[in-house]
Length: 267
Image: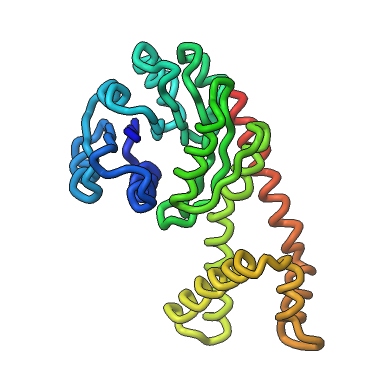
C-alpha cells in the first residue's frame, strides 16, 4: 500500500506514525509533501518517510492520498492535482469543514473521496474520529479508512450530515475537557493542594474515569451513582454542579459548536 500525504503537519505526522505502528505500511511506502523545508526535514528524520516539496510527486507515487492542508487551501491544491488523480486513487481529506461535494467539484469523476473528522488526541494515539464516504468510494475504501483511523484511536462511519455534530462533540470536546481539568486543578489548589500535584491528580482523574467508561461499558450515570454515596461528599458536589447548570452548559456548548460547523461548511 503506497500512501501519500499532501501536507505534513501535526495530524499528518500522527497518522503516519499510527499507520507504520499498525503495520499498514512501511516508512518506505509513505511519501509526504510540505511547503516548509524544515518541516520536511523533521518528518524525514523522525519518521523515516520520503519527503518532497512537490504535491504532484506524492500523487504519482501513491494509491492513497491523505489531504492534510488548511481548509482554505483545499480548492487550489485539488485543482493542482486534478490532472493526476483518477479512479485508481483514494483521497482521504482531514481538512475541517470542507464538504465532499466541494472537493468532488474540483476533481475528475471517479476519484474516491472520503471526508474525515479526526480530533487533537490523534497526536497521542487516542483520537475519536468519524468519516463519510463520497459518491465513488467503495466498500474496501471504507474498510481502509477505518483501519487507518483505528491506528490512532476509534472511528465511526457516518452520514456526512452528522459530521457537524461530530465536530461539536469530539472535534471541540478536547478543549472543554482541558478546561475541566484546569478547573479541577484550581479547585484542588483552592482546597490547599500544590499546583503540580493538583494538575496531575486532575488529569489522571479524567483519564481514569474515561478509561472506566470505555472498558466497563457501563452507562456514565451508573458509574456516577457508584461514586456518590448517600449523604456524602460527592453527592454534595453534584448538587452544586447541577445548581450551576453544569450539564446544560456542556450540552449547549456541543450544540453551538455543531451549528457553527454547519455554518462554516456552508460558506
